[in-house]
Amino acid sequence: MDSTIKFKVNPDRNADMKTALSEVYDALVEKGYDPINQILGYILSEDPTYITNYKNARTLVRRIDRDELLREMLRHYLDV
Image 1 (cartoon, rainbow, N blue to C red):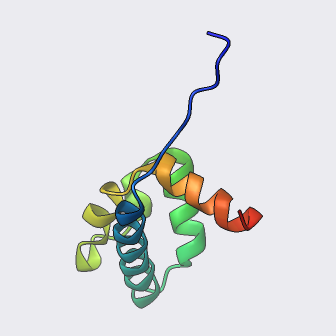
Image 2: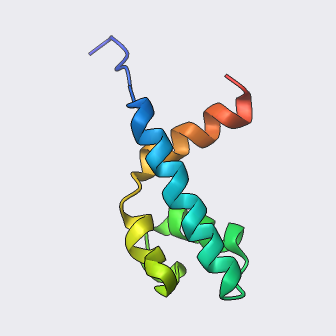
């Protein structure tokens, strides 16, 4: 096991993930929550109770693969 494992993500999946995350963000704002803190709490713990049920946001966030989300966040942050 000396070789590095390559991780690949489907670009179409990224668009779906972005749409779902935007809808979750909007639902959290509408309910008066700090969406960044709530989403971060969910990402770190995988506890869906950080996300409101309003507008089906909790179901939407559970469809997002956490590893894919973290990969895209890192890629965006590093501009690569």
